[in-house]
Length: 325
Image 1 (tube, rainbow, N blue to C red):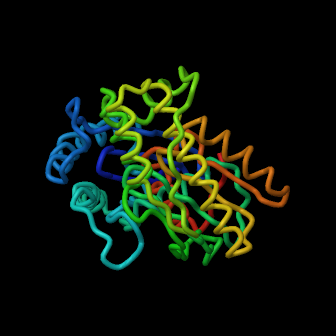
Image 2: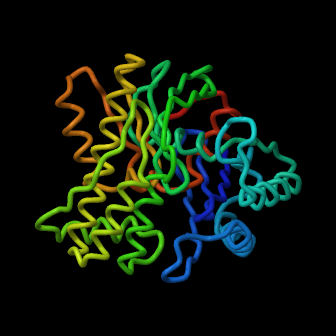
């Protein structure tokens, strides 16, 4: 059976994935990069070094139980977003390795972006029926954007992506990580902050800063830091962060819906794996009207992964679109 390889080297995860000609996931290999306790992230040079260290190990894992002659194409994310000027050095690690493998096996290499990989993984895992256009909210440690996505060619799922709005300062994931690290949680702090928030009995109230399709998290982050300095209960602050994110995202989605009249929205990115936020958005937005459809990338494929990138290779090579999981 034909196989398609995806490679993604984001700032915090080395990812490889294999899908087959039916759009089924064959292998999903990831290594979260190591961040020292108390640190709020990695410099690009540090992340690049770790990718170079882990990529050979993941490639060995991928190739251990497959016949290399079944591999038909490789797709690799070479930059964060499909816009001019989008660039991060970490993506060069994956690109270089993918080029070596493609050349060695004499197979085509397809360049794509980290964001398009997230969107493809979201379409594949969420059950969203393929439509001509939809809203997408991409919320993670490195991106907080609301997008209008148009499908240019359903056969190979090429996207036209227009940024409608997003953060003016901190990304949603940065907000979570800064507060989580301040409370002694390891980086990335999202999963641990979510568990801590479940112990809350009196959630803190943080300010919201949404203006149309723009959102700011620096003010809420500063307020949360002040509460921690005053000795506020950690669990209550953690739940306050979740509530702030939930209400901010709900408001910006409502505003985008009002502006565009598009009634389908897909949410992707690491922050989307938070069950409290997923549930709250579903409940809050569905109350606004039964004609608004909200879809989430499954938790496993919300965080950084190469599955969507692999599916892009499959879609372009076979001209067969995607098959939802």
